Structure formats: C-alpha cells, structure tokens
Image (cartoon, rainbow, N blue to C red; front, side, top):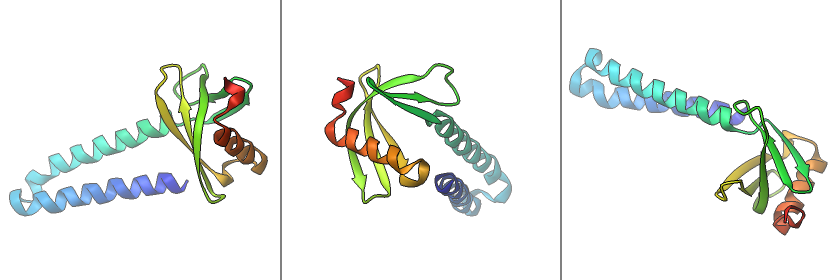
Length: 131
C-alpha cells in the first residue's frame, strides 16, 4: 500500500513539475496538453508495473512459482541471491526462464514471518534446492 501511495505522489509531483516548467514559457492553456500526456504516460506505466508484480508465490523444490494479474500460468524462477535490509525488507535476485535476473522486493509484513525467514535463508544460500 505504501508503494502505491509513493508512486501516486510521484506521478502528481512530476505532473505538477511539468506544468510549472511549461506554463511560464507557453502559457497555461498551451501547457495543458503536454501535461495531460505526461500524466497519462506515468499513470499507465505505474499501472503496468503494478499489474506485473507477483500476487502469489509458492516455494517449491525447483525454486519459486510466481503468479501475477496478467498471466494465467505461473512463472518459475530460481533464487540466485538476496539482499536483506534489517528484518524489514528482502530483495531476492530471481533468474527466470530467459536467464535474466530480476529483483523481487518482499516486505516483512507481506506474509507470515515463517515464509519471510524461509525466503531469506533460500536467498542467502542461492537456493540450492532450485539447482
């Protein structure tokens, strides 16, 4: 929820900054179309990012299975490493079918503490269970 609010605030600040920069040069009326375009592009990008984020995950013997809003089928990924910020945030490095590394951010309060602990252990080990 906090990330959604932060993105919404960013979109509003970027839109206001665009208007602030363009309005003195072109006037308020001619500045509105580019400002609206900036708002639409940023809002659509934020929505696309939101929809691409995994909604469910399952820890299996072969790594993680991730589901998001777009795909009906799960995506399998191997945990190749992690970075942990205190006991509040875990960033997993995932290698998918394409082999490209993608980060997965998991807040400690996003699920049960046992799942957060299991994911952090798998991340520190580079997930030998997924080899």
